[in-house]
Length: 101
Image: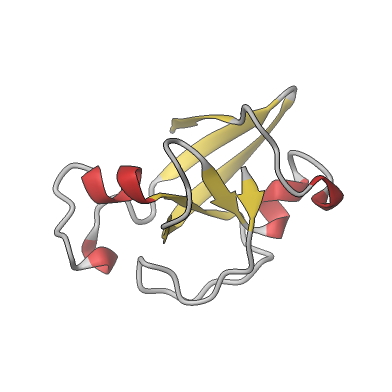
């Protein structure tokens, strides 16, 4: 997992780095059931919640964006979400597990 500075997300809302939100990989976003490609903001994945876990730490995040550079199940979190799992100085964390809630 990595972190980014959000703005206008694929789900059609403007977000900030202080929110507990996440961009999921493009393959997951685009293949979500009943996703009306190319109308991204109508994707039913928007607003879904997931629990991301790294080691003994977990954070609840809301899907608001699509990560075109993420491969597979990788997540791109806000600084607020990333900090709940690891120090920002770490930059990238591997083996983040996540599940829909």
